[in-house]
Length: 195
Image 1 (cartoon, one colour):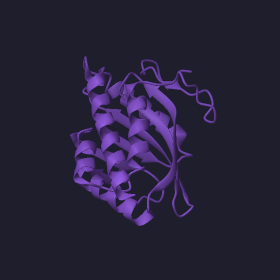
Image 2: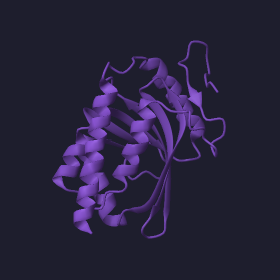
Image 3: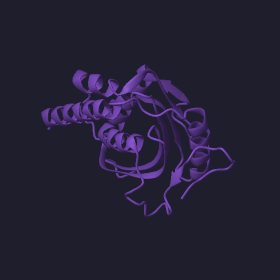
Image 4: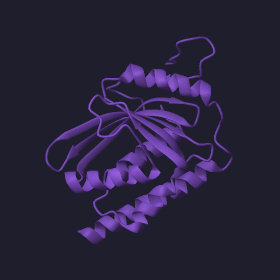
């Protein structure tokens, strides 16, 4: 299904139903983002190695913007995002179950996913993330919305598809995948040391 509000907008593929996202709906951004989010929220032991591997996946000017109705922050750069994730892990005790589903994609650098985390304390956190990756497929910008704000997420994806039509650089996916796998291994090792 293509979502486009006006002629000339970017080609956007949207899941036909939010509850049954077809597996064919994917791109580099969606694959990297779903694995990254799952890994970030599985961290129980923030070591220097984990942080270094995580940061290698972000651009120097990475920013995350919070558009949820009850935000804990409005916008965070690289440094503050790291502190936010560390504090979240310490306070919440981490998550025990994490799922992500791809809602929409555009090109190879833009994706919308919905994430759900069941926390140690029994609470459930859900959010929708619109993510833009740089041409080297490092995370450049993320906008977090409430799960019911899918229309706003798709509108934002439309805007980004027009504003950032560039494709990923040749060879970028393999390098990005290697960075992600290094991050996943660092988290697995740090968590094992914590157990």
